[in-house]
Image (cartoon, rainbow, N blue to C red; front, side):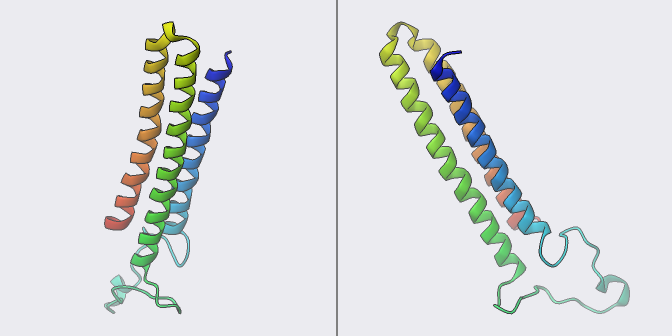
Length: 135
């Protein structure tokens, strides 16, 4: 396998790993801490009203923690995606400079790789939006 193709695959694998780590951070922030987002409301059976938001000793609410988790997830995914896209574009331009006759094939492979990287970033954004507004 050519070195440029190996580098593209390695870059795509690193970007997928970074997106997976960002997703795990968000899931850990949602389901970690003081209970699951899907846990039953203990005040539902007793008739006692539960507080709207719980705060910890520092005054940070659950909504605030969700927002922080969402910001971290989107920030890490966007930064990693931008780095991956820059590397992919640089390597494809080097490949085109070395073999101008293969320009169409190199450009189509690069665009396909960029689409996959951008898809991972959009998934992180969707998870962040769900985290803030749904959970």
